Length: 638
Image 1 (cartoon, helix red, strand yellow):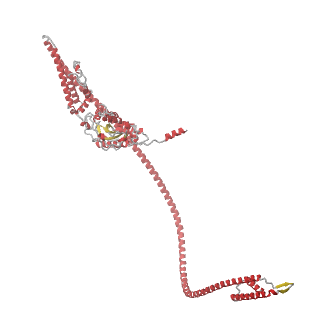
Image 2 (cartoon, one colour; image 1 turned 135 degrees about the vertical axis):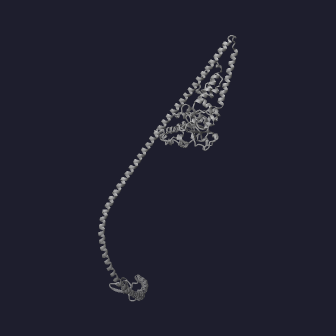
Image 3 (cartoon, one colour; image 1 turned 90 degrees about the vertical axis):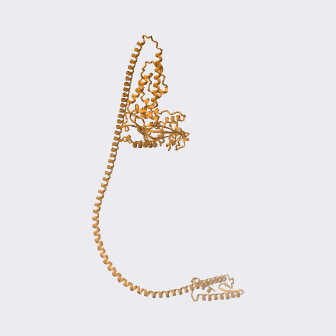
């Protein structure tokens, strides 16, 4: 369970994000795309990144070239030409050295690359390639070609800015990154770069580039292999020569290329029946490599006929430039011819010197030689005529084959253009149908909205009518209420008039009362002042009474205290001067004087207390009744 959970977590773990030069690129040498440098300065070009991170490649589209048919320069030759876009693939190593590799691609190749990428990455939003012109020939204007080149360059930059697309196999095959890497190492090692398969791939990609046209394309690709970025517009395009870049090459290179194309026109022929077979090694291997397909003849006559047939085929092939045959190549042919002719005549003289004949056979031999020379001359002329006819037939055959191929190419081009126009028309009709469907949907939506609006308006109208009817009923009720209210207002007005009259009378009465009240107010103020004075006097009396009562309370407390003391002393008195025996009073004579003294003192004290009470009370009873009764009983007992 633990291992399965670990395996599940390992499967669910997200892969780390990709970035340029992270060492995971599947391209050759692990290279990654980089934006092109602003200025290409050859090997020491400065790129917009650090070269130590790894190998990098960039893509530039500096110009375009055209291939015109070889059937002659006409007014429609430019319109019937095939347009190739030159792509420069720049390579930079991790050491900072740069190299460039050029390839040619047609517009259909870009469309094929777009379809391949969309099929390889179905879930990715691949930028769409620039569209075709449905009813407009792109070759009719250099401005349109230049606009398409800019559009293709921008599309390539957008395409390669995605790291997955820039590392894909279709992009690597389209840009020939392996060939670019090989050319970098060959240039680094000091060897000339091989002609890459760019011309072959560009030729195979279009079904129109066969025969001499494809040969000229390969030659132009070989010529333009090492060119850097230059002007985007080409010069006069004609006679199967691509662009203005070929005009910068040497005449020897151009003549060798044309000899390679026209070498098959010369027929092999042994004119001397192998008599001079020992001279077949005169031409070196380098000459045969420089003129492939052109088999040299052995004798001087065959060499002369070869030159004449070659010049005849040159004049018979339409669209070929005579100026291309002037120069060192033709001079080399003549010098070789003169050399071989001299060797042949020298050998002939040596052979005549070695023949020994009798004198009687001399005339017969001379006649035989003369007849043989005549026959040889006639045979030579017949052979030259036959060779010329054969050359003319070969030239006509080649012309017819090229014409047939050109017609096939034009037919395929017209078919392709017809298919493209038909597809564009179908796409346009589909777009129109979809647009019409969208318009229909929009109109249906608007119709439904209008219906809903009409329904809402109808509902609003019905509601307004119902509200109007209800409002009319409410208006009638309101009018009735208004009449009632008007009657009430009239009655209220009458009441108001009556109230105003009553209020006026009341005002008069109130004025009189106010006057009387003002008069009485002065009298009341006087009375109030008298009462206030009496109040102050009474307050003074009350204060004096309060003080007096407080003093009486104190004196009463003192009197009671003294009474209490006397009573206590009386109770404590232990004089017993009365003896009670059977209801008879006996007086103890020993205690009699003391008791009399005590009685006299207590009488004095009682008199004083009574006098004080009389003074204090002033004839008023201020003591509570119970205390007063107790006091009277006490006095009575005493």
